[in-house]
Every structure is written in C-alpha cells, then in structure tokens.
Length: 260
Image (cartoon, rainbow, N blue to C red):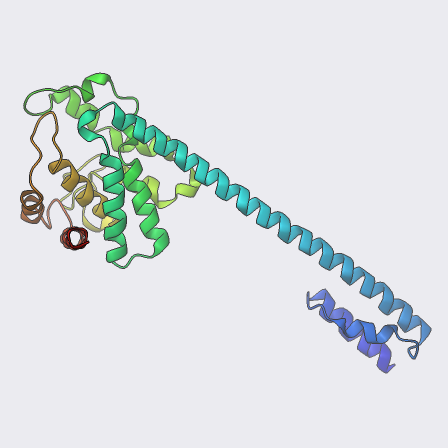
C-alpha cells in the first residue's frame, strides 16, 4: 500500500506539471510487479511529454525570432518610405531622422523606459509618413506662408499617417503618436483638437522635437532660425502650444550634444 500511495502522489504531481525522477525509485526490482509496470509506463509518458514541451518551446522561440525579423524588415521598409518622402523635399532632408533621434533622447532623459523611448523614436521617424500621397506642389518652393489649399492638405497628414500604419500592430504606441504629433495643449491643434492630458506624453515630446527642427531648418517659406531663437519661441508658448517639461528636456538634450 505504501508503494501505491507513493505512486499516486507522484502521478498527482506529474499531472500538475511538476516532473521529477522520484518515479524511477518505483521501477526497481524490490517493488511489486504491478507498481513497477505502472511506474515504468508513467516514466516513459513523462519523458514523451517533456520532449513535446521542449519542441513546443523551440517552436515558440523560432516564431519569436521570425516575428522579430518581420518587424525589423517592416520597420526598415516603412522607414525607407519616410526617407523617400524626404528626398522629394530638399528642405526637409534628414528631418524625420533628426526628430526621431531628438525625441528618443528626450524620452530617455524624462525617465521613460527603453521600450517607450524606442516607440517615441520610431514615431519621430514616421511622423510625416502621411505626406506620402501628397502632390508635388506641396514640396515645391514658394514665397511667404503656405497657400490655404496646401495648409488644408498638410493638416490631413497625421490622420493619413495613422491610417497607413494602423495594421502594423507591433508599432504599438508609435501609431497614436503619429496621429497626435500636431495636437496642442490648448486644444487648437489638429486633427482631433485634443488638449492637455488627452495628448499622450510621447506626442507632446514629438511636437517639441518636430517644431524645433522645423524652426532651425531652412524651409521654402522661412529661413532657419538659430537654436537660441527657436528655443525662445518654444518657451514663449510653453503651456499653451507646447509642454514645458518637454521643452526643458529638449534643452537638456541639446546641452548634452554641445558638450560631447
């Protein structure tokens, strides 16, 4: 009876997924024949179960590696699209990469974790992807402010970008950041007129990085400002258009770059 109780206890543990070699003690010659036969069968079954579990674990790891490769390749493809977009406009060549780099650094400095900072960096790289289908007129030089018809087209690009990226689930937060990077704290941004805390922190970071780079870069309608002048404009509108904490993070990042 002791051997039977011991056997039942081991079987119960195996059923719970707690495998051990205790079953092997019941396969020795000093055990009753019936107990020994059951123990041998259970031991063999346990080995087969463990082998199948190992195979499943290997398949899961292979799938993870495959998914990672697909993710990397897709990001490279979409980033190439963003680069191709920039190539249509000599004035904004490198803009997306600079915004992504600045935003990622700002996010890290503000204490966001590595995954969040990477999502924000990707959001910066892809933030203008919605301009992919825009007419060439948008990228041609013109004097003064953008014409009204172009302004209306430009205001569509955050929503268009989110639509392009929406099915790339692995981009996660980055898609919403693309959608929100032109929202303002005072609710006067676009396309959804979100305000204050309705705007994700990552999008507020992108808004500051994007605006700073735009102001310090030559554009068809304006000469690039100095970093000091651009920071002055950002500070002037802190709390209404841009997030003050994000502006402070930008200043810190720019200071770090200058000291390198």
